[in-house]
Image 1 (cartoon, one colour):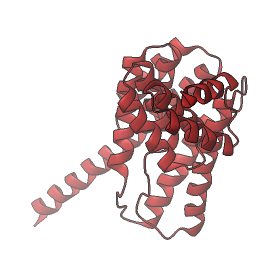
Image 2 (image 1 turned 135 degrees about the vertical axis):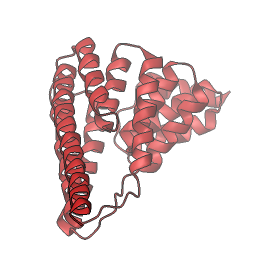
Image 3 (image 1 turned 180 degrees about the horizontal axis):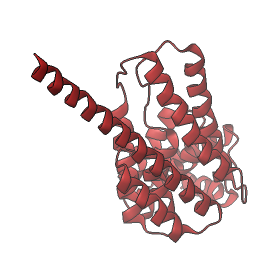
Amino acid sequence: MTRSLVTLLLVVLSALSLTAQVAADRTKARELNRLGWDYMKNEQFDNAVKAFQQSVEIDTSFDMPWYGLGRAHLALKQFVSATSALVRCRELYIQQSGKQFTSQQEAQRYRRDRILEIDEMIRELTTGPQTAQRQEQLRQVQEHRRQLQDIISRGNNITIENSVPAWVSLSLGSAYFRSGKLSDAEREFKAAIDADRKAGEALNNLAVVYLETERFDLAKTTIEAAKKTGFRVNPELERAIKERAKN
């Protein structure tokens, strides 16, 4: 009986030690993720790549630095590497969707951690030049944060509700587009729109795909939809679509 109790105690202590190590790894990974976004804010993209890469090496299941890594590679025009990182980020969101927690407290702790991580993105997006793209991404991230906060306020769900965020699909679509993979880009831009019907940049980019693939009527209706969201469409793009739709 004593031997059984000792064995059980060792198992429990081992599990607690493993849980503590996982928590310590995520804490360190978060620090590096925060550093990566600081580098992104200052347009130090090579340093951002290093910080995000170190973060995911410590915690391979941490989706936010995978996203940051993809964005940093995009900024450096390293489109193959950007695609790889963003595909991994998307896979992690898909894997997490529907996950069950053992208690409401565990679920709420997860969501509060997510808000802290999203706040790092918001902080980066609200500094520096406010381009139309940055403003659109900021809107999407803030909306995702609002949804998480609403769930925390209700406090009665122990299932992760995650789907792939619009900004992940949008960035992945951009990486595919810059790599010349138009069909893949189209799929991801559509996924971004499905996740957020107000995703003006995704609509704009989808219109460009339609233009490039000579589906001019679709390009025209899609660019009109982008304008209705309030997204600032490049007049040259709109003119090109209208002219080619006439022919």
